[in-house]
Length: 193
Image 1 (tube, rainbow, N blue to C red):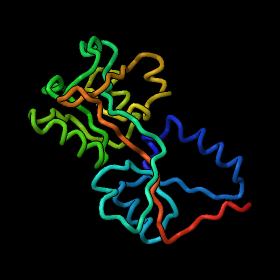
Image 2: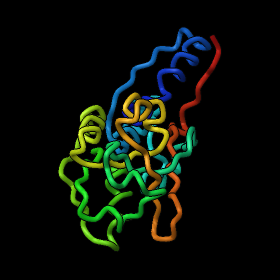
Image 3: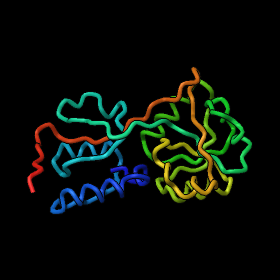
């Protein structure tokens, strides 16, 4: 799974699932999406949680993908940033701004594609540690990008230390970010308890 991006709602979903299916054992491991897909193919895992975007879902006839949540990409800045006055932000608005990027191939590919026509991003640091990223944002060291659902109930956002601003493309459209699960077409689940 990519649990760091699901932490705002994953625990409550897990709790509900465990009440419904108490005898099912769950092992949550964080890996890159490509590794998760490979583990599903090799039957090392039953199900994986990943962003459902190209190239992951292309040429995968042996797998089933289902969307669990549809989000939008947002920019996260500290409360004192002049960017907080903006209704939304486009890539051209962020050129030169220090960026800390979540170390996930999907986020990297998404932001590279969005920024490519405008220039190079000023990436100061990449990390898969969301706490480090959020603390860095709150302290004004850099801004970052996450799907809006990733931090929806996060304490940094709720107490106003970081501010979420919609990220739009050149047409002022906020791109969709689908997340969901992947499983093998060859493996069937039984919900008998």
